[in-house]
Length: 200
Image (cartoon, rainbow, N blue to C red):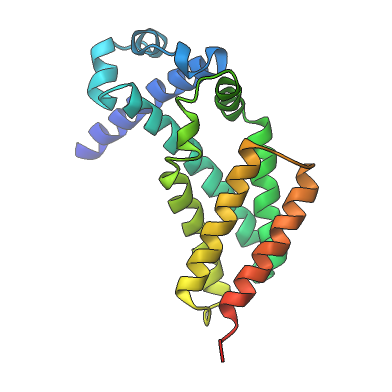
């Protein structure tokens, strides 16, 4: 009974987040209203508030779901290449940059930010603890499996650095995706191998 209730609540939350995502893509986060999200989701405005507390709470849920999707894809890309650190890093970075470039929600966030509104951008940048924690965790899990002798602190720094750089290139791309992914993969290889090399 409890599982059914939890499942029903999760479906409700997913429906509301879907509605918020669609409205963000259509008109930017500034154009999203809790009442409008409620109508689109087919629930009451109070239900939206009950589930998420505030518009900021809804933003966090929206950001978390996108991050979870990206991180699941990163894990899959890394797994496909096993112990080949450079190939795994390239695949994961290339996929992330490519998906971000074509993701309508990411486009809406960045377009809004360039127009002077940065309500959701901090979830990718200054308040990106969720992105950093989840994505770094995926890299650490993979690197820990294939570089078991690596220094944990150096490995953690390497993963954090790579994730921060990938995020920066999502927000402000400077070169074609292939070129950026290749350069970042080379850097990731260097950082991870440095972590795995014992210091004299």
